[in-house]
Each structure stands twice: as structure tokens, then as C-alpha cells.
Amino acid sequence: MGSRERILVHACCASCSSYVLEHLAGRFDVTAYWYNPNIQPAREHDLRLGEMRDICVRLGIELLEGPYDTASWDGAIAPLAHLGEKSERCRVCYRFRLEETARKAAETGVPLFTTTLSVSPHKIHRWIDEEGAAAAERHGVRFHGEDFKKKGGFQESSRKSREQGLTRQDYCGCLYSLQESIERKKAKGRD
Image (cartoon, rainbow, N blue to C red):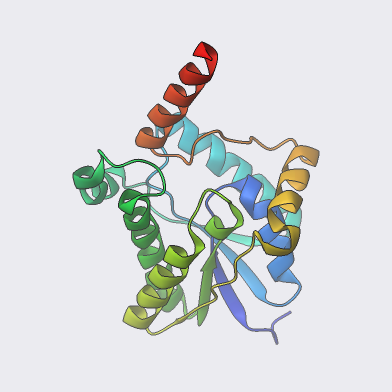
């Protein structure tokens, strides 16, 4: 496995990672990186991290854990709090996490990085690709901009997560998204 190129994979949750990590392991020497200060409340963060640890053990993939620095994330996102999902608020969140992942890749000598974010149909791949490429350039590494939802990737991640009993979240992780999810559920109840 050491002869293959190393890749650091930013992992947003075990559900998305269940497919992406296995998919990449066929071509790369994979290390997962957990950096998600957007996930709140803390109990939700800890639940998702616990599942991520389990999936990495199952797949035999090393997991590096970044800091849980919600204050820095909140500071970056707060000016955009009034914006909804799939807005500039989300793009800044991608940038925040991809910047840290690129920094970690450079620090650990891993030449390539990517993210599981693109497996979700709720994420904008073009923004992920642009932010990943910009972060890669700043840190002297490369970004692997594969859109993991293509070719049935999202369906496969959903299937794998159901098979493995992983939590399927109904919000991305941030408190803004959680509130939007609650409001959508209330609106559906009124129909």
C-alpha cells in the first residue's frame, strides 16, 4: 500500500465516509481527517466522531482528529448567519474546513487531499472544487476534486450507511442548518 500516492480525506461524517473512503482506498493510501467545528451541539459532534472512529477501524484507515474549535468557526460564519442553506454561508464553511485540511496535509507531508462533502446532493460541488483548489495552492499541496455523488456514489453511501447502522442526519451539522431542518419539518406538518 505504501507505493500508492497518499491522500488526506476530510471526513464530514461516517455516513458520507462509508462509501468515499472505500472508493478511494482502491487507488490511494488513505488517511481520514476529522475537522468539523461546524457540528453543533457538542453531543452531535461527539456522536458523529464516534461513528467516524468506528468506520475507520472497520476499514483499517488511520483517522487524524483536528481540534473542535467552534469559536473560530462561529466567528467566520456569524456575518452570514442570516443566509440559508446552499448560500455563501455554506461556501465559507467549505472554505474553513478545506483550508484546515490543506494545512494538515502539508504539515503531515501528504501531497493530496479531498473531502467527503461532495458525496452529498445538498452540497455545491463547484464551490467545493474551487475552495479546495485555492486552499491547495496556498499550502503547496494538490486537491483531488472528484464529485463523489456521481456514478451512484450518493446512493451507495446511503446503502452502506443503512447496512452499517450509521446515523443519517437531517441537517449538515451547524446550528443554522439544524434550525432550518426544524422549520422544514414544521412546515411539512402544516400541509
